[in-house]
Image 1 (spheres, rainbow, N blue to C red):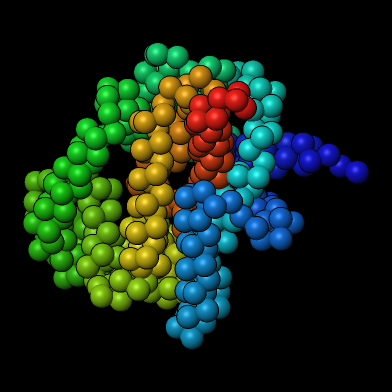
Image 2 (spheres, rainbow, N blue to C red):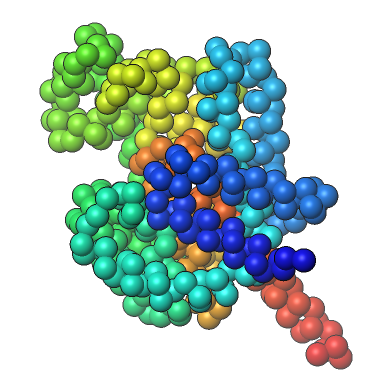
Amino acid sequence: MVKKKTIAFFIFGITLLYIISPWFFERKLLFNEAIALSGFCLIAYKRFKFSNDPISLAVVLLILWGGVHLLVSLVRMDSLYYYLRNSVIWYSAFAFFTGFFCFKYLGLFVKKIRNFLRLYVGLFLFAPISKFLFERFGMATLFPALFKNAGRWTLAILAVINIVYSFTYSSLTAMIIGFVYLLLLLCPSYRLFKQLVFLFTISFIVFFIYIQPNLNIISQHYRYENTVAIHEVMNSNPILAVDGNSTWRLVLWKQVIVDHFPANLFGIGFGTPMMKYFPVEDYSKLKTLPYVIGAHNSFIYLFGRLGLVYLIIIGYIYRVIFKEYFYHKQYYYKNAQVQIFWSFFALTITALFNPSLESPIYAAGYWMVLGFLAKAIQERRFVHDQNNYQFENPVLA
């Protein structure tokens, strides 16, 4: 009989290859679907009994809400093909259970592959190769595993690695990850971090409202065949003229947040068109792009598909994670688990600026690492509760 550790190591091996080269292992061998299926099989093996920790409950609610949209979308979809393409948002979340239930084998697996990972990253971090062998920003997920133990300067070193990564592979996402690591290093408390996030969010909302008339220009002369419309948008404001990719992102975000209001409060579901204006790189895929092109911000895109319920649930999950990180950081440093937080933060930044949770190229990795994180937090709370119980009942100590 095959040991559970062997099965877990096999799944972790698949996941490692998936993160390093999703453009091959997902597109050719459907590794995202394999990892998601493993999560479904594990929760089925557990007779669909799940933990009552906050993150697990939130993910289960999210899966159930996605199930509601799966049913409702059966009568709203334009075609079964687009419905199935969009359903990756729902079924990829089952990878969470893979991470949660296989967590106890993670440390052993990372120990076995760490030297290989150091050699691989050390070589190709400075000698750029194809994204088929070294993904442009997804590799940031693996960088925290390079360190056996986390010390005072580990986060600073990780920041430098990501900044080097950003130059080697021309990845702005990797640079932002590096700066976020520096922010986490310098930010002394959850309260200050929350205030900074609040100020940034409010500033962005004010800017987004202010820039709406400029973004509306896209509708005047938009054509699939040329880039006249997006250049008109860029030329309408000096800020929008700085970077064409960022301007396209704002145009896409506007369509999800503004153009689909108020339908997006419930969510437009699966198999329905999301975008009307978008960049075209491959004209053979023109018919599918309104349905499958991402907003280059997965949280905004999933809000459009799943509605306000999704935002509330995901906001709650991140509140739990950041409070846990800042209030119990020393515990996770001592247990060599703080690296899981850093990997998840890297995935979060990737999702903020790229199609991730709506794409099989990245989705399973995000949910699996979240599963690791949920289990680590559950174990920390169990240890805390046990210590409190022994303190209150010294005769048992």
